[in-house]
Amino acid sequence: MKLAEWRVEMQHLKQARLLDHVDGPCLRLMQEAFEPFLIDADDILLSPLEPNHYLYLVLDGELAVHLDSLDGQPVRTIGPGDCAGEISFMDNLPPSAYVIALKATVLMRLHRRSLPLLTRSPRLMQNLAELLCQRVRLSDRLIINSEQNANVDTLTGSFNRRWLEHIYNRESTRCAFNGQPLSVLMLDVDRFKDYNDKHGHLAGDHALCLVVDTLGKLLRPADSLVRYGGEEFVILLPDMALDDARNVGERLRQSLETITSFRSPIGALPGVTISIGVAPMQETDDLKTLIHAADQALYQAKALGRNRVCG
Image 1 (cartoon, rainbow, N blue to C red):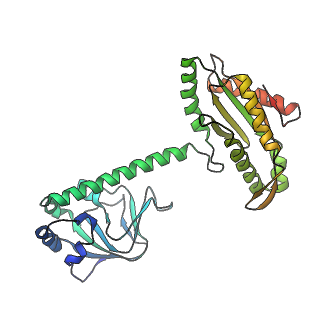
Image 2: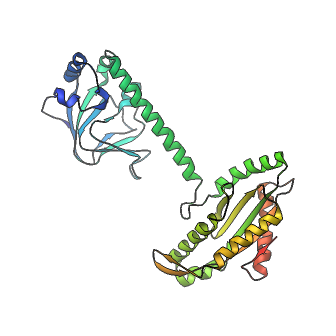
Image 3: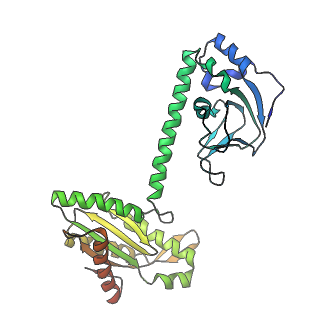
């Protein structure tokens, strides 16, 4: 990283969205305050571990923004016309993310001691406020996406046990308050260890995805399909009594039984069958006791020969 030898010109300033529609006198002051700056590919421009005193405007090149560490994928990129470091520039605290150059990048930078210049232009302050609002909205979206990802099983795309605990608390309370039933299906892929041993663990992963894709198409939006662990899944069925839950379980079982083979990225693979245990929520049930009841019914289904519904 180094200062460049050329002079900041008016056309450079007019490339920056931050300075959009800012009046000429203010731009001329900015022209004297901004410094031309160069950064090489892979150089770190901003780090939470180092204080930052500059606002950077990108003229050419591309920067990447990483949260927490540089090991993962960037959450966004910054290209020509955009700026970097504006939050730490304003609040004088360390940056909240890493910013690294994806390629050699040409920038202009403004030191924090020139902050009073920004207040001379109402339009510039409006642009800055809009920019900060965009950053807040982006942060909110990242938080939402992070929460959603924390509830999803990365292999199959179904919900995980963390979501099951949350949704059971909500739905069991709602159903009890409204006097409505709630049922649970617990299912297990039949002889899944043998399937893995014969066809490989990658084939087993594709078989689990087949189960989720097939069953998910037959469930209501209010139902929750959860990967409980390994080849075990739980399906929460709010507003559904035991007889209807049995019928749903049978329909799900049949849907997989009819798939004798399926295409996968590693070629054609044999289908799988499932055993299902059904349990209705009792007045005193918590999630643990309801899962236990469904698990006992599942154990019975497997003891009777698998590929069936019990409960």
